[in-house]
Length: 273
Image (cartoon, rainbow, N blue to C red):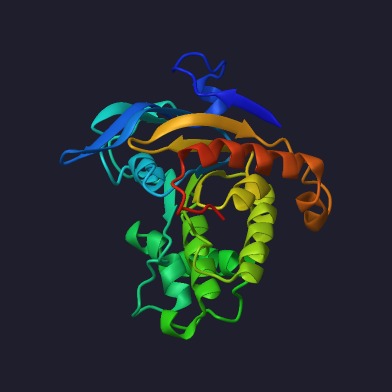
């Protein structure tokens, strides 16, 4: 496990060629409330970075700023070396509430991003079907969101993000609404999927265990306002059995280290999973 203290921009030792994205000194004020203060994070290309911290620390706000859905009050976001001025095709957002179109079946929901881009129907449906199979939803193409379980709706949202072939996936607590058994299965499926797709993922979670299990690096945010406290790289060997990974000293040490950091910022009544 490697722990890197928060550092100013320019001390990373990484170039834009190594990075999919950077946030550089961003802050965000809503009315008179300051949500974020001087947040700087490097997101290495092809890695999964989790944003972790107590409620109200600005995890989702940071994600939306990277997505171009929210403007920072100060600071800068760079994606592939270019400043972000709004949403872009190189980024795809996977929402916690799935954000599926209720009037469209799974196939059309998954293909919808390509439909907006004007891709011909046969081509976009062929691409969508491939990703439906990839996330384990084959056979559900004609079902509507109301006919799907929460886990199936989440898989459809992930398939839609993959279909538009964005380089960066932005995932806002995507497994929070499913039971623990499905959550663990989705975590494993995500790791297998990313091994094939080679995407960069920025992942918001409240769960220390989830963050350590899936992440190349974990960014710990404090609150009032949100700041980067530490960046932890678990350096876990994921080449073997996933259940064994959860019992490995590297995994357990990383969970303990992050908990010891986070509990300094929690009120007594708050809990991190």
